[in-house]
Amino acid sequence: MNSEVIASYNQDKIAIATIGSHSALQIIHGARQEGFRTVLVCTQARAKLYSSFPLASPDRLIVVERFSDLLTDDVQEELLAENAILIPHGSFVEYVGAQAILDRLRVPVFGNKTVLNWETDRRKQREWLVSAGVPVPRNYPDLAAVDGPVIAKLSGAKGGAGLISAANREELQQNLDKAMIDQYTFQEYLIGTRYYPHYFYSKMRDRVEILGIDRRDETNIDELYRYREFIDGSPSYVVVGNRPLVVRESLLPQLLSDAEGLVASSQRLFPPGLIGPFCLEMVCQDNMKFVAVELSARIVAGTNLYPAGSPYSRYYFAGEMSTGRRIALEIREGLQQGRLTQIVS
Picture 1 (cartoon, helix red, strand yellow):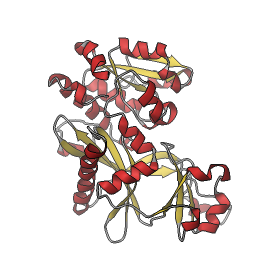
Picture 2: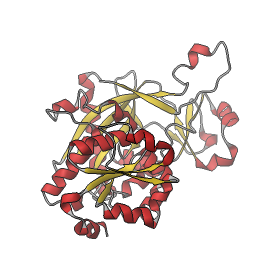
Picture 3: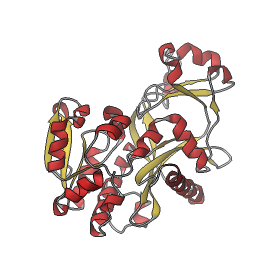
């Protein structure tokens, strides 16, 4: 269906669109650098913010009451009239919903929409990682099987909200939301250094690129030790910011190999597979090996650190290349090569 929509578009007036949250500034800025018109679907409360950055301000704002209004016929018709291609990100997935995007969205989306179901369903996500040969921590099939340090996770792109860590099963039981017990995944808690490498699979160039690495700042877990003696605080993992990182060069081969395996596996599991940006949440253990505890199959907020490019993107591109701009460049090359329908769904 979206191939027909793309065929109906004015190819000289393609617009790049997203919703006003998460990594929208970077997406709009990158699209403008590549010469695209830009459209932002935004709530009134955030409209002033996105109009206040001259180089990342959209050409058009579509103001809605809530982000899920993106799915209304009126908003979709406006986007179609703008020849828009939507860029999904974490807030896009969380507020609009992966299944709703698949079932009700008529506007073309950059990448393969099917991947969103594989990202948000933790069982599918693990199947994908294992199929790719990427090392993963143990999963406990249920609460009764927990026999050591554990972290409980809910499905979906929640920015760390709802994560619960515990030293053992007894401690975990005290903190779980009993009404949501069937929605948790119980995973072995790994000790190590956290890395979040940002990747991009280019269909146009048939290669996986490492565009940056970050580490997350979370509400209190990293600083909890500072005030343990004053209050009895509970660990909280809600992401509030990001820090730039580079890894030892000798560790890069595993990071690249895991990403290439993930792309190849996706092409077998849900053709045409993963297209565009993605990220692995990794823990580097004391044996210098990485284990993947989660993946994000779209642009992640950690890429916001690099609007002018990262230490890694400079090895692919001579100029500035954020992940937002990399998306726009892929769309530009798709247009130039007459292959746009291969990178949208």
